[in-house]
Image (cartoon, rainbow, N blue to C red):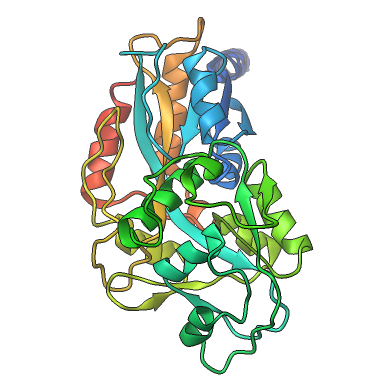
Length: 339
């Protein structure tokens, strides 16, 4: 009995020690940035082992917050130089996904088809009515109303905007001659009449949902949850492809190198059978050489980024594409440099 009592006492003590260690290992981490990846990060943070507060501010603000030492980590859909954090940060691709083109046209009973030149003309206002011949030619037999098109765009600096405008400039340079820019008003060759700005992806989707005859662009996750229809896009292989995690993965899986400062060089003109070309990577912005925020728990950030990259399995169901192949190996090597 005495031995049994001793073992119970030791076990209880070990239990207390284990509980204490587990509680102490959970760090409070703050991050902000990509609204494209908001649902992915939100779904994954609960199982990360840390107390993560993440704000959907848009990629530009996320980069600025990390650069100014406001947050422990950031998330961005584009890799841009950080002036104050020189030598103290890494861009690590953690998830990918398609940019969906969602629309609110009650008369269209089947999925609309678009190509890059037509989308470019719509977003710059050159095509301003739904029954335009260019849209009709891509959608024979579909009833299209003679209604003005209302473009909904991201009003703040956005990685989604930067990738989309880069795609349009590379795939349809005649129709979209301006180079990529995270700010839509700076990127578009001309602002469409009656366009509406939206602060982040979630607001953009809700605006399209509440505005008849509108069109906008957002991550697939928000488009799915809104139950709004989205267009299939003609890829460089000549196929009309719906924005799905699988189609985005086919396209994004063709790239295998990740630079810690400039990210992945995406060739939007690449011919990939079954691939959805208008896709992007979301990067974790992680501290290197101590980072810029005093007191950041770099080992905890490392665990979080590794969790987003390799352990969280919620992405595909939400509309995201996991990093795979050679790029996954390259991304893991970058995770090892966090600290």
